[in-house]
Every structure is written in structure tokens, then in C-alpha cells.
Image (cartoon, rainbow, N blue to C red; front, side, top):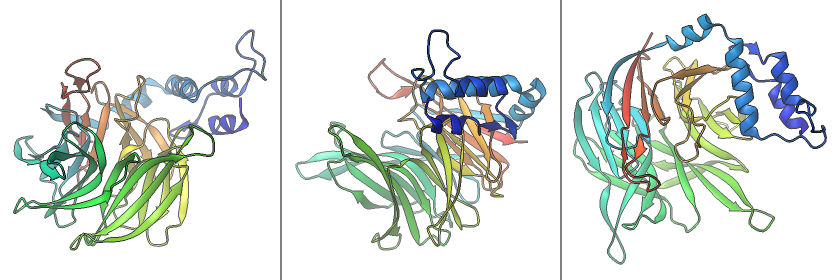
Length: 379
């Protein structure tokens, strides 16, 4: 096993509790499995993750696990009718926006779960009379609550990806302003959208896979770009990260720090100074860092797994981290097959989670059934 994997494994922790010695020995030894020698024993990152999480779970007392799970109390559940790819609270906390990733955005009364309106992302035209729409994978309200930004993949009527864009919806008039963020045959994915604290700029995180040095090799590349909201003009590439598998971005409540979820053999969260672009620190988590959401006091982060990257061992709950201490643990929300979006309310009293549901026909990727949005009271 490589030294780097062993180095990571001994740092894994849960609430300050080190990985038990037996598990650590298993992870870093090549002679645990009979018949295998150290120089030939290989183990996948996924297996390392499974072993580590099993060991940590076993090392926690029932009381510790109960305390973590008792943080949330369910208030209500909304049948969503399509996979939930993004969630966002309005600044006053009264509305919750959701996206199906299928050209439809819904806005709900956050206190009752009653649907207020729909925003239809379909119906635009491309040359050749191809109807296109936006599959939104990220949502954000402007600080004044007047604009809802949706970022995602632009698709043709036959479901071919043709680029990425931001749609800025004026919620009072229903008028939409579209800002193309990429028009390229290369595969680019919108991973996050956030407003600057003054509301004058909007940032979008884009992922792509560029050709590597070897034939057939593709290297993950990430960019965070900034656009001017009033004019829609491109302002700058705030940060370009090579060989970097970005999953999500969240702005700290004080507007000074970007938390970036990414994957580097395991799930990681890094922190960057928004003004200088300098990298501050990183820590590792055990599960996906998709749909990062700050608690309003800036001390905690919640996340889940990217719906486009999760596999059969997907997390059916959320990950909770302390911005200084790192990974704290996971909380089950009872949503299947896995949680795909999270959002803290502005007052910190509620947390919304959404899931993917199941395809209407196996293997078709059609509109998902059984998906839900759950509203939790934070205790």
C-alpha cells in the first residue's frame, strides 16, 4: 500500500477520536490478509473508507451516536416528484427553492411546505430550432432576496449537453436573464453558484476533464469564475485549480472565506481567502462534499454526496463538519437512495435536505419517483 494512503488513514478521526489501533493496523499493514505479502497487498480507496467508517462507528458509544442523531427533528416532508438537485433558502428564511435537475425550479413556503410557484427553465431556442433548457444543479438567492440564480447544464431537446449557463430570475417580475458560462464541446459541469455579499457579483464553479499526458487520460480541472450581475459581463477567473475534482463551494457568512469541497483519494474541504485567493487550510472527511452549506454562525458545514458521482455505497444522510476541528460525523435522514442536496436556514433553526428518489424505469434515468424534501428543526 502506498505511504500516502497510510498517511491519510492514521489522521482519520470522528469528533476528535482517533481511528482505533486495530483498524489503523489493518489499513497500513500489508500482511493482514493471509496469503498476501506486503509488497503485493492492494486495497481500494472505497474499501479503505468502508473499513475506516466501520471502525469509527464501532468505537462510538450508543450515547455518542444518539447525541449526533438527536441534533435534527423532522418537521415535515414534501413529495417532490423529481430528483432534488439543489436547495436554497431566501435571505428572510420564508421561502425554499428546489431544483429537479430537469428544467423545473419550485419555490415553497418554508414554514408549511406549500408550493408557491414554478420557474420553467425549458423553451428557449437554438439555431436549427432546437428547444433547450437548463438542468439546474445549483441555486442561490441574492442577498436582497430579489434574484434567484440557477446554474447548470444546458441541454438540447434530445438531451445533449451543449454548454453551461447561469439564469438570473427576477422573482417579482418573473423575467429571466441568461448568462452563458461555457459553450464548448468539452464536458463542463456547473458545481456551485454563489452571490458576493454585496449582491453585485455572482460566482460559478465549473468542472471539466482535460486530456492528460497519456493516451486516454483525462485530468480533472476546476475554475471559479465571476460575473457582473447588473450587466451579465464576465469579470474574471477568480481561481483555476489544476488536477482538482471540485464538488461544491460555499461562502462563509462573513463573506471572507470560500469553503470548497473536493475529492483527492477521499473527500476533502479546503478554505480560501476570497479577497487574496490564498489557500488557508484543508481537512478530510469520509463522504462527499457536495452541496456544502454553512451554518449562519459560520462554525459548521453540512454536505452530502454529488448526485452525479455517488455510487452504490452512497450516504443516506448528511455529513457534518466543524470548520476548525474537521469531520464530526454523519446523520441519517432516512432518505433513499441517498441525500443529494442540503441547505441551512438563515436563522440556523432549520436544515432542509433533498434526495434523488428512484428512476421511473430501471436504467432509463427518467423522471425520478419517490423523491422528497425534508425540513428539519435543529435542536
